[in-house]
Amino acid sequence: MLRIAVPNKGSLSGPASDMLHEAGYRQRKESKELVTVDPDNEVEFFYLRPKDIAIYVSSGKLDIGITGEDLLIDSGAKAETILPLGFARSTFRFASRPGAVKDIAGLAGKTIATSYEGIVARYLAERGVDANVVHLDGAVETAIELGVAEAIADVVETGTSLRNAGLEVFGEPIMRSEACVIRREGEGTDDPKVQQFLRRLQGVLVARTYVMMDYDCRAEHLEKAVALTPGLESPTVSPLHNEGWVAVRAMVPAKGAQRIMDDLYALGARAILTTAIHACRL
Image (cartoon, rainbow, N blue to C red; front, top):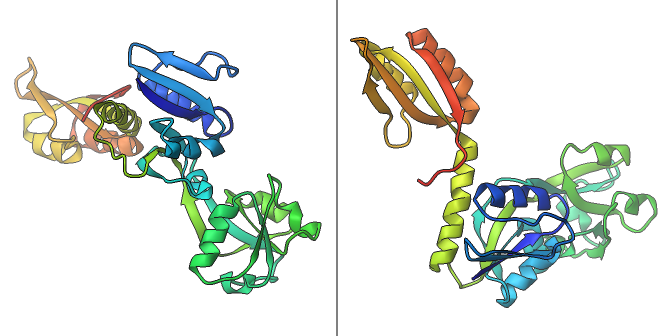
């Protein structure tokens, strides 16, 4: 039975469980549940602290896990990303009082507060910057005001929290992160059960990215219509009862679906429909 670690709380928890549910796996019904067995799919899910998942996977006690790339790197665990999942995206930046530090080199000899000391220490070491890194669990913005540090390193989304604290970012991003599936280093993905799990998640990712588009068009406009909706290999084309008309079906990127519908309509296509894709295998 495949043993999989899933985040039990935080921003990773809900999206991870939703994706697993979409992939056809049974998920826990209550947040207090620590283990869920899915006998139909021969999988056992363990709900763990996101920061601990990389440690469990690297130990070999669990086969794979879902966590953040930032948490994986910060842990220093011997595990690796085998599939990015496209959610919980974040950017890590340095920040300080305006003008206090202009670039990364300016951090030399200073104290930096962060909840991700592993990431920050590694980043500074790779650039030859000698600084003191202090670990704080959350709310690192106040560290400068309270005199604990002269700079911080934290997740930055809109930058509103930093501005409200009188801080500004400087230098290049430390890293960009997103949720991912991880596996112990050297284990690979040859295990058929692991391959099946990854295919299911990849199917969810594709299903979220594409929609199915159906429309009718005149046969003489077919080549131009197909150029707009090439599909993955090629679209399905079927003759209609009315001579000179064909029905076309193709997968198209969801992001540009409305524009494609406009272009098809201008070309003379009619009965243009889009439907969601709930699962797929490519």
